[in-house]
Image (cartoon, rainbow, N blue to C red; front, side, top):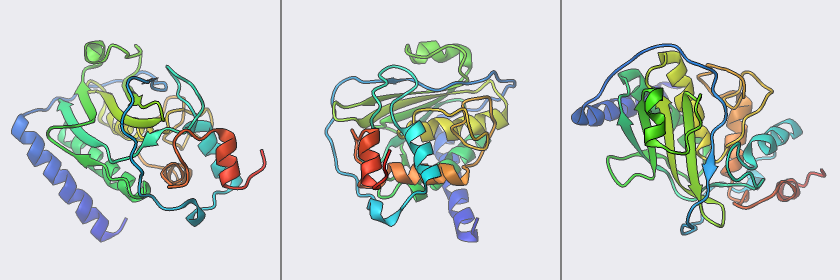
Length: 253
């Protein structure tokens, strides 16, 4: 990591800490069960905007990377499982709620910084109001009262809304505040990344953020970075099927 990037991340984390301190917080506990994939729901349509991302011609994925992308980017683990591409068309406005620790806020700042380097023209930003992506740091026992769609047994959970044209326009993320620091750091990265549209998990690649089995991975693997980049290429459009993606990269199924 370069010195300038470290300084930027540190500055962003400091801003989050100052802003969040104004509204009050803190708390920490322990232990954590295995988590699974998160759900998705499809309410009312939202206005579709055209994302300003880099064209697909800039990136030619290997067969290995493209196969992994198709595994985790098409459909969702819960709710509507229609296997098409879904993603945000404008940057999520993120608001933090509940009882995050200072370390949680630093982790969130780091993940936002990394994602902003990977998602083309999209920009994730922290806000104090008018959010469309809310992150709640609360004890796991309180999750059902925050989100009725919550699936019991998950220490981390995300729920997204998308339009009839498959544009994601709203999301809620739940992070169990009564889990260890290491577990929370993993969950912050996994849930925020999956809420961007990479909604499925995989039984392969233990080093990946998208690994289905219990994991405490706290950084993106090389292949994770590639699949995040692919999702937000301009030519990878919402509503695309597996065949559409293969045709885009001129790959025979």
